[in-house]
Image (cartoon, rainbow, N blue to C red; front, side, top):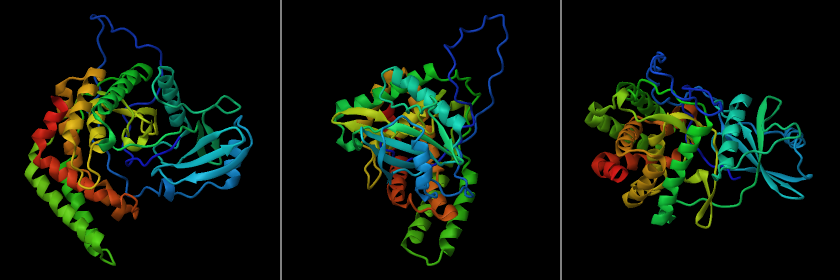
Length: 393
């Protein structure tokens, strides 16, 4: 299984990953219903004090890798090579006399818990059993899918052959297939994960908080030494963002306007999809499996798959085909997609994670993504109605 770069961690505090039996029937009308949960929190911003993650974390010593692999019933190991891709966790390609495997070391604080990882494994095994292209982990000699060794958490997967495809490489039928697949995943997750109690609403990013963060980042860019081209561009990006906030700050989504919450993959995009020919063979990296508005994941995925890699501009013809297929497979209405598109647009308007990583963490791995991200936001603000129409008609 080839891991892929993922977006930064987000808060998943709305619920735990459990896999109960079928959902019980509704309570009789005479029985009082429990109150609905309060509004869910706004999207979390990166923690500037978080330690380095993924490929910036300390490598796993060979002795630890050998001890972990010894827990599995594989043939003798011939070679273990680190896989370079992946921002949040470490991965290793394992070659044995009878086959290849992918060994994953969970590093990110949000997912490096044995209990959290085991819950993800139960969900992916259930999805695999339903015929979806999800590869579950292998069990060790003790029938466990999680191996904890010297404070680290590991899982071993079969190696899946294939490659990644950008949205521009997908013809219209393949765009429809992608939307259908995500819709099927959302419906299946609703069946295999814990029932969801809908929150009373969902808060959105606070533009005043964003403006204060922009001031901090502009000051960091201005004072950075040696002052270079990136600092100059960052100051311009931040000035442009303040202008956009001034123009659109009154359009903040109301908490009650959020589409329904459900279980989502959490990081669905092209680098977490593996293709062989025209067929998707695996949906990778379920680290962020959690509760989120499902339609928002559909919109967010489209902005990451069907964008121009240099300018960020969306291919709205492909988006339209994908969105129609998603709505049909997920039984999601146009109102849900409209609300989701507005909230994802607002989230992007207030999202500065790439510059936070650069200036607050000293982590420059996301720097190459900044031009296209800024370009897409500016274009989206100008073409808002056309983007909305692509998702809803």
